[in-house]
Image (cartoon, rainbow, N blue to C red):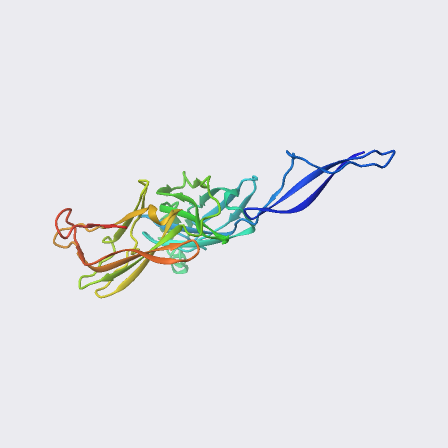
Length: 343
C-alpha cells in the first residue's frame, strides 16, 4: 500500500513556513511498513508568507490649462486585476469642477486586499458629453410675445453646451495597505481627453512589490518667502528631482497657482514615482515660470529645507539652501533656476 502524508514542519527559512510531504509504503497483506522517506524534490511545495497587501489606491490628478467641467462631464476609474476582473469607481470628482492648474486627490477603497503586483492597469474614462440647459422661466415667458417664435432658436442655442475637453497634466496612483504606504503603482504624464478620445489606459508598474521600509517614497519642502512674494497665477514654481541613475521627476506648479505672500512659510510634499534608497537622490532643481518684462514677477526665497520620508515614516533632512532671488533671468545671480545638491 502506498500513500502520501503532508505535514507542517517547524522549519523557518527567512520568515516562511515550509510544508513537506512524505511517501509511506507498506504491505497491505502483512501490515508492515517501511520508515518514512522525505521526498527530496516534492512536486507541490507551499510557501506561506504574510507579505504586504493593498487595501486602497490614492489617485492624484493634476489639471493643465483646460479644466474638467464637472456636472455631467465627469471622470470614471476602472482598476483591472491580473485575474481578469475589474473594479469600477464612477464620478470620482463627484460632479465638481477641477479647475485649471489644480491638483486633486481621490481615494478608492478596494473590495478586498490584494498583493500590489496583482494590479495590472488603471483605466481613466472621461464622460465628455455635452448638455442642454433649458431657457429660464422668464425667457420662456418672453417667447409668448409676437417676436417669440423667431427668438426660440436663439434661446435654444444658448442652452446647448459643447462636449467637454480636459487637459490632464499628470496622473499618479499610489497603494496603501498592510506594510504598504504610498507605494507608486502607476504614473502617466500629459493627456488631453476629448469627445473623440475619452479613454486612457495606464499600465501598472510590472515590478511593484513589498517595499523596503528604509526606502524613501516622499520628499517634503518648507519654503520661507522674504520681502518679495511669489505672485502665483501664471508665475509659479516647478520642482525637478534628479536621481543617481539619470532619471528626473518633474512636478509643475507646486504652489498650485496660489500667491506666497511676503514673510510666509509654505510646505510642499512630493510623492516619488518610484521608492528609492536615500543615496539614489542626487539633487533638486527649483525653477520659476516668470515671463520677465516690466510687469514680470520676482520672488525672494529666504530659505528652503528639504527632507526625505521613508516607507516606515522616518523623516530626515537631506538638503537646505539659503537666500535666492528668482527672476526671469537665464544667467546671473538672480536666475530663474536654482540647483541644490543632495549629499
